[in-house]
Image (cartoon, rainbow, N blue to C red):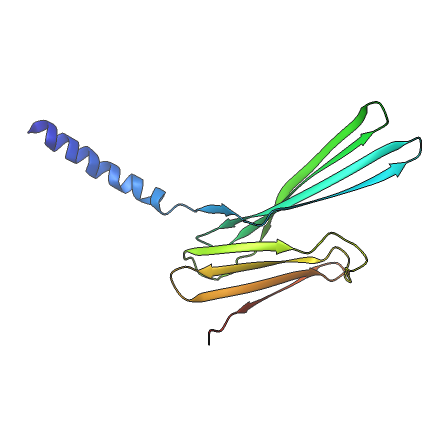
Length: 159
């Protein structure tokens, strides 16, 4: 009986310590990763290929998110790889919803720069939904070409 009392006392002491862990932030990756590659020729028969990929990491409790990107550039001649460079990181973006909750999301980006991209590198969209209510918000961010990006969000109406 004494062991049971000690075990219950230990469990009661541990319960408050475990409660904050249950409220910890939950992060999810977007389901929509893309990769784009380009290649170029340089003087002396050198070939360079550059590939970039991105994803979004979303906090499902606060609706804050990060845009993450990785790139790799490979330079070679006809016989060997001469140089490999990598770069990447994540940039924090603002919250989509003002209050904490339980959210789901997805994100996508425009194609890499080409003749169809009017504002340069294009932009991205993020969709977030409150999974406890019928609430969806869509956000679009585009490069203005004049310095800072322009970002607007809109709450969806249901008919």
